[in-house]
Image 1 (cartoon, rainbow, N blue to C red):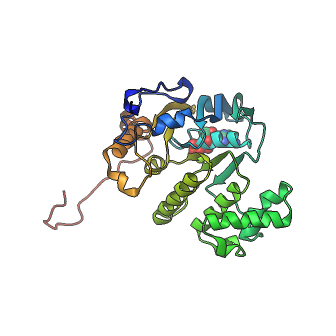
Image 2: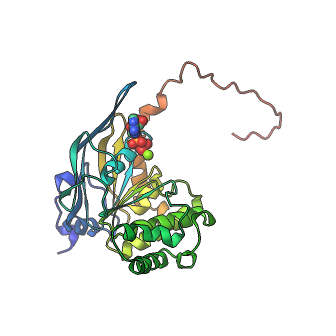
Image 3: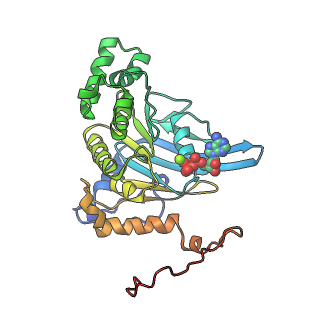
Length: 314
Ligand SMILES: Nc1ncnc2c1ncn2[C@@H]1O[C@H](COP(=O)(O)OP(=O)(O)O)[C@@H](O)[C@H]1O
Ligand SMILES: [Mg+2]
């Protein structure tokens, strides 16, 4: 019996909306994924911020779970609460209500079980590349020798073995993010939390970093929650994509990406990829957004013709 003969009922907490049509050869990848244990569970998470301007409801009743070795991307318009979500998962921010569980244990602050990589280069500028990666193990009680050996191993894995003694300012943006990834991985986290980690990189470096991250994820026991506002990036990387809507930040859908693995840039033009992108675009930018009235103080541009060249372009 093939996987096609055996429909797999999706657990309600991990699936919203209709299943996407899998591309040929990709039928059982997600079914296998759902059989793995749930590493991260988010239950009824809400968060509001109070200030003198009033209350901002950043997240409302967000629930989802992530399976072991799953790659989940989170997308949504700016201000929909993506960073707030990841900061709560990291334990850097407390929820107003709801719960986050990692391996069934409630999160009550930062911990080694969650690695973090953010967009800004959060490396210690006064430490070498190796020193940055050794920092976590040293804090956690490893001897200098053991921490150094671990740092070297992870720097080799991210292709920066030769730069162990360099300082962050001597590295390119992509290399610094690779150090940040090594620094997170050295603690062997259960979940990697990444908030637009490649958002500041140029397109080519970004593509290389995506490839590199997929290679790492393929080769080690890693579960990833990756925030991005780039839909191509999300589809290229993710098994599933959590779509948030703003004001307040709520789960719109948790969609399956029906693009087979291993992924390659050649798939960007594939029907499965394009259909997923169209679906995400419709969710994030519903058609009525285009008919929004122009703000009263915004003057409409008045176009005049400055050329009489006869060769019309439109
Ligand atoms: N520390 C804070 N104090 C007050 N409001 C905040 C704070 N952090 C975020 N917000 C508000 O919460 C909402 C979600 O923000 P954020 O999580 O940064 O969104 P995103 O990362 O999706 O762009 C926004 O309206 C933002 O202004
Ligand atoms: Mg953000």
